[in-house]
Length: 119
Image (cartoon, rainbow, N blue to C red):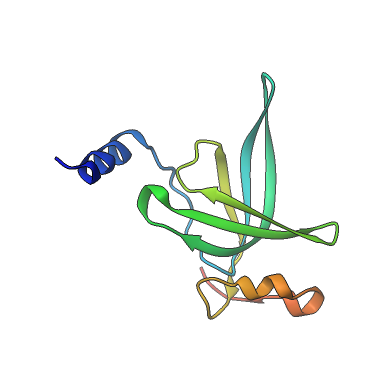
């Protein structure tokens, strides 16, 4: 048994992954996650556009971008994070790229994404 086999075994046995809804780059989602402040815990939401999904299986992450106070804010969430409480898909967007980093250079009406009619 090599190192890679041991790592795969540990990832598959001990990391429990929540079932999240299907989403891809261009979709607008709301991620509700836990924040620990001292000994208290609270839930906070982060709503924005998914600009990329990266990795596979237990190491997969997704990046969400939103505009807050005129400044672009991006946050990277691991799929296997125990801090993620819920993910809700607000809108399905139509984009022709898997990674929509060009959105960083756009603002206002140019930064809009066409909405898809998906079920």
